Length: 449
Image (cartoon, rainbow, N blue to C red; front, side, top):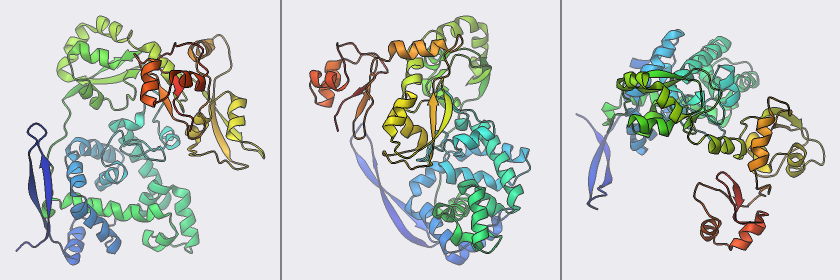
């Protein structure tokens, strides 16, 4: 006999009719011993230790946040074959595919507070170590195929360091250095649960959460959890692009939904492939490949003419953008503040905050700051200076607490002032504007504090 511990009343609304109804969601009970026995049945190469901490996460996925679990279940058929292929390529346990659920909830464009990105939540530096390029336009960390291959290689390398899958998973979350530190502080114990108390707090939850996710995905039906929909992509083929390429224009020419094209190419962040790209493999619905091949010249020519200047301007002037810049590292000295450092390097305070994950104005002596500066002026880089200096009409640097607005095509000073609830004269004064001319991409301060 199946036992039920609770039922959820879920309100479902129909927008068109304004009606709603309540749906009863029975949740089958599962005892501690029953869950432990189920885990033992699916344990393979990665140990699946069971305890109260793991049980707490299992309760979360099977009881407290069932909509999240159903959403994940709806995407496993889309992403798991990609993960399985990558893991098999490097001889790794297939059950590692569940790690991406812990990392991102199977969202290719997931971005964490620490700026980890993609299905496998790569930080920029780690991603580049494994060949994942990212810039203002493109981010390979959002490409399911490229990021899965990189994640498999990263996991392989971590396992080679620790010869233990639980420690390799912990290192994936907090880095091998923190795991080695925990091993030393524990008296050189070599198992995850032996060094548990010496790991960062987030990592202590990471491995138990992985075990809970693996259990939930394998025994979803036993907990009355089923996908309410299925996320699938159309069959696709690729065409090579080696030029600036505006995706919406291309989609309109093919009479294809732009969202479908973006779903096939989640690594395109700004709706365009930048100038200078070589052999970008653009995914398109496979049934359109013959048409594109026959009309390549006119399709590419048209897609190469729309929005280039506007996007190029935004790429160079959006706070935190590194597009067209080179990185320097500055070591903070006594007496330094963000404002003086920004002036010295001709960047904005908001850029410094973005590049270094700084939320306020606090910096400390000896701290290393990443500063992305314009390259040395010469015949090959002069266009970078021309583009930014000729169009960057707003030189005011926002201060802490000030709100900003990025001018969109069609915006007027009157409309912006009205939305910000300030006078036009006040708006012009805050931004050192002499006339009424503004340009798309321009940054305007819209509040003093």
